[in-house]
Length: 570
Image (cartoon, rainbow, N blue to C red):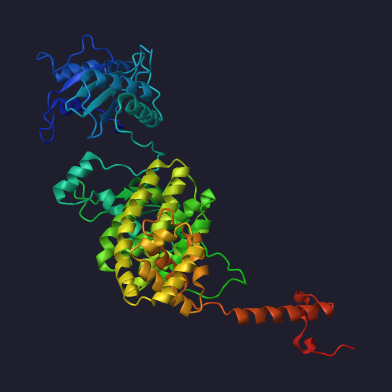
């Protein structure tokens, strides 16, 4: 059940005309009052042929007129309007049930507190089977204004309880980070102009698509302007950018002027301060002993970056940052993916936008590596090969599973559902991407003897999943991957254990396919030379021992001038 409180209005008679009228598409039938502040003597134009809309409006507005005459100040925001709609699959409720629901909602909103005879005047009008409209005038009988600040939260809680009491569809409790729903006016305008999306939805997609391409807010606005979007910056006296608004081409008001929407009205996470926090992060300093090898392509780099999520989801502010950056990577991947995959991945990116934000503050610096990977893909001119693309999609599938689990643990119901839906779209794309990879690998399967040896490695490394792996149609392809890795100097047993540790296989529908992408990505680099590593360690230990015997520590030894390092001791 959804109760959508509308912005305050000033015309009681005008709203009644809509509620008792035929509707925009003749959808209003049998309009009548099912509940009100005082049903006795209430003029109901839907049931009493002698009652008029003007009489009903005057009846509701009477406390407003009294206050206006007493204080000499006209109130212009006194009309409170709240449609309440049941889910399409819910049963049809009776008038008596809708009356009880309306009473509970006005009490929760503070319009008519329980046991308060001096509350606001209100009515609930029903003109369809699945919803009612509650209209109230927000001046109490004692002339005071009601305290209905935060009424949306309380009304939402009341709706969740009503769903339980009446056996209706259970909706998830929100956390006030969802975007604003399109108004009826916006939807009708889009329909009239032949647009598939309302202006705010269209602009939101364009802004999110531009984020991976920009490293600061100035670049972002310039990118949007180059894309044909009208930009209206708000600057302070010093010239600093304080805010922005954007407009869709062709979205004009009645005077033919461009309509602009502030970023925060498009989505809560698209305000200028939040965009600055996401975009303008500096690269962390790399430790001197860190590995210097880099993946050969942005696609490999992105896969490596996604795999860091497994260890970074324990800290909430880091987890939120990584989930936000993950959405940017999905968006960048959708833009640069092969044509066949773009529609599915764009749907995944749009869906994941809801999972990107929550009430938890993100430490955006923590997700710099993931965000940099998204930018590298957004700016690359080279498409991925089939195995690199399949590996990235498989990594994104696992990342959305982690995101859904984290949101579930934090009771973020809407975000968890968005992550699960995103997982479905990414899984569909990943399945298609892996088909040519599996077919190519299966066509050059290893010998029967080699396959038996590799099967032994599988049973030793992942005994709990071995039977599922062998019955997976992709097992011959996995055997080829393991044989290729072994030929490159890797140990199949070790690769299998590492892959299973990075991505648990219990939730994998086809574990062999999961292992294929994981092991292909890991084994693309040459295996470490153990003899060379042992020799390096021996040399390091010998040099250290010599330095210690001379009474010189390693840092001090490095500070000795070069000409003195090999001077004979006296």
